Structure formats: structure tokens, C-alpha cells
Image 1 (cartoon, rainbow, N blue to C red):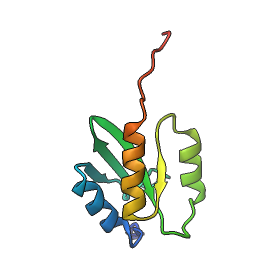
Image 2: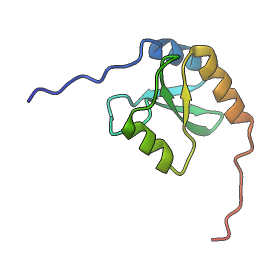
Image 3: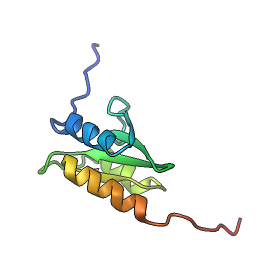
Image 4: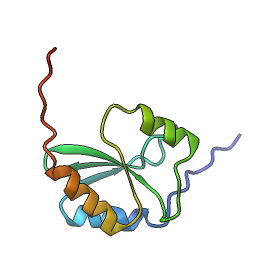
Length: 101
């Protein structure tokens, strides 16, 4: 059975360009599938996961489950401006914490 190419949202390349323009490293994970977010982003020594959707796009069932059970950061973005704003907001939050372990 031939494999199907993963369809990426039309805005994904513009979002990647905008993130790189503000100094982020971006890896396209859209071929991974299984609900994994579309983009891994490195910015200011932190890592972020973004799922790219169009303005009216919604998470499919696998993506919803991935987001629900992932014990880390993940965000849905729908435009270059939204992606950059989300990245800047997340990077400004103090993610430091102490474990009792």
C-alpha cells in the first residue's frame, strides 16, 4: 500500500519563516503523525511544541489525545503573528520549579 504524504496547513511555511525571523530554531515534525505537533521550536534555551492549524482548523482525535496526555508545553497556532506572539509569551513565563524528588 503506498504511503500518503502528510498534508501541511497552508500557513505553516509562513509561520516557520516568522519564527525563524525572531531567532527561533524550527524543526518540522509534521511527518511524524500519531498526533505529534507539527513544529518543535527552540528559543532562548527552551523548547516548545506548536500544532499549526488554519483559523478554522481543529485538532483531530489523535492530536487531541496527544495534547491531553503530553506532560509538557504544547500550543495551537494559526498565523505567523499568533505563532510569534505565543512564542514570546511562553518564553517570558518563568518555567523554573523545584522538585521534591
